[in-house]
Image (cartoon, rainbow, N blue to C red; front, side, top):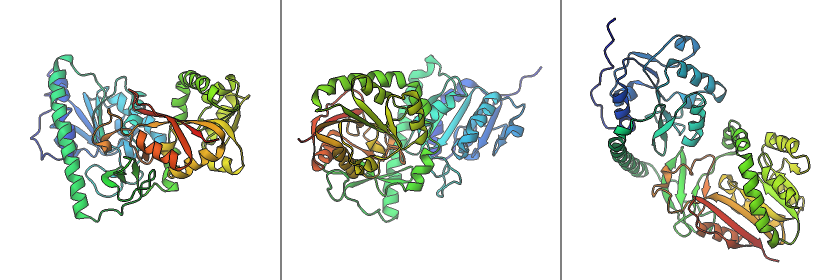
Amino acid sequence: MTQSAPAAIAPAPTLDRTTRLWRLIEPDVRELHPHSVLCCGETPDVAAAAKIAVQTEIASPAAAALAGRTSDLVICAGLLERTPVSELDALLQQLRQVSARAVFHISTCSRPLGGTTPTPNCTVRYADWWRPKLRQAFEHVEPVATSANDVVFKTWKSSPLQLPLRAWRRVRAQAALRQDAAATTAQSIESSARPPAPVCLSCEAPSPEYLGDKNDYHVWKCRRCSLVFVNPMPTGAEIDEFYSQHPRNDKYLRKSGGKFRRARWRIMRLKRLVPGRRFLDIGCSIGSSVDAARMAGFEATGIDLDPQSIEFAAQQYPQCRFLHVSSSELARRGEKFDLIFSTEVIEHVTDPQAFVDDLRALLNPGGIVFLTTPHATHFRIPHDILSWYGLKPPEHIVLFGRKSITALFERRGLEVLSAPLRLKTTLKVVARRAA
């Protein structure tokens, strides 16, 4: 039986953004030596950029189109982000049946690859959301390239013999991508009117620096306190649409044991600093920290805006109190607490000043708030913060450093007791309301 010829290497196209991304996987594709390649989605330019001659191409794969197909390599571009979340798992399983080796080019903003207008039904997601989703169908998934607006994944392991050469080529390609992004941002600023400069949400300094766009949102950085924030903020409809498809409870459930142990250790350390025994967790999710506070001797309450999380927590920990309310609504009720936890919440809120006002209103005199959030001025954060996974509007829309969080707290009547620099890129803050 005569073996079919391997997929031909096509002439190199113009070095645009897509080409640079796909050249990162060129050594891997050459090592595969594919004889058959199946392309799905917006593939003509992408396949050319990958220097691969395509044997089969389908624009929108469905069960009928993929049934019975096998291939050495699947190239999928501009498709997954337009697939409804309810249909995504089925599509990935279909692609896995075609081949275990696949390359996915996913746009993490609401524009199609190379396009300028929003794509209908486009799902805005970021790199660390897509990785576990792909792993449900493929045994191995690793990101090859990540930029401010897109990411490339492959589903096979690299050969150890090729790693040094591949790493060198990827460093060069990533540098080219950063230069391309900087040039694109400068060009967009020159060709269109710069968005009106807002006031810093932390220190209220005027005229912040405009960094560029990510996921179609304007990103700014305060020149005085280094707060990084989005302006204009996402609308309520955009936020509701995003969180309606966010698979957060499953992730938190897998980590509930570790979260319980860390929360209990933190609560026992803070217990001696507080005047009473009323505890509140803002954004309590499935309730692990609330139960840890109860076991440490507190009258424990948890609140969250997700009704499913509150329902699950109430069933899991019936001895605790859980409420489906916002922090502002709870403050209006006049409730007071001695220790408040707010872990990985403030980076999500559209009005951090009002949120900190709620914290102060909910604290008894002498009460303590413990807060964690991504650390935007950490030494391990990339210089180009637009490429950092921690900045991911419309989810993470306000990023603090030690200077900006201190400015915000002290301007709203809370004294920062501790905000140490740590090896991890997480900012941990302990603050007190004056007696």
